Length: 371
Image (cartoon, rainbow, N blue to C red):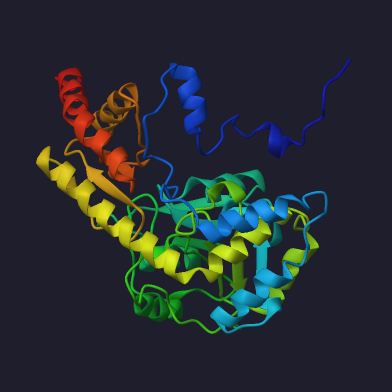
């Protein structure tokens, strides 16, 4: 009796996933998190109009969703000044990155990313047999010049850049990205991940012609719109690449209720403005909590703050584990020297009260362990 005959590429992949969910961590430790500040979800939730639309749509959940996502596209087209053929929807940015890699990368093809950048992109590249070339961060930010130079050296199919960046929270100005495009080698596509763009300062989003074949941009309803569980993401760019997604995407990936909720969320600009203001206030409070405990914070254009624990990755990991033992869920960057930090999501006042209460003891425990 034999089991499944995996292709060698799949058989050689490690049995790992990019992230371990907080629910799994709770089951493993037997400790329920009192403050969920590690997944960069919006603890402020979605617009009440989105919740109402989700509930109304549930009555017709027996129907398949519109695979063309026509209503959502129409609303976005008006906002992005483009046509329906310039937008594609998928299962969050994660799913769309997987589709992009499948479209462009054959086994052995070169792909460039930053060492320590969002790990799900690298996960997809490995799964399709691409060869990852990584460049280090510079001053805790992704180094565009180095990324594009490496792409030229290795004839990369894709360069991945997050702006604003996860896990450090830094951002480049839109003008800087526009100017850097002149350095992007011929035949390389820039995958510009803008998951956190709604939190960023004015001018962070570059002005790039929709028909520019060099760039595809990714956005999501998981962050500022507060719908991470609905898995609604979209990409936009030049029509030839966007239309190619129809060759491979799961056309019924998004459920009917998620479509309705996302459309209502998109139309509630007042709620979005309120959320971004609350996130700014929470970032400021995280900064005050950190500095009161002798820690430094990095400037953030996202809904989280990278807090410099002042030592190395082992110490930051000890802080993270001590917080988890006290019911506070946070994450940290994976790669040195950025792994000296922990990453704390913007939360409600009661979540940050718990952080403020538990951080001193967690630091004391980590210092005792390190000593």
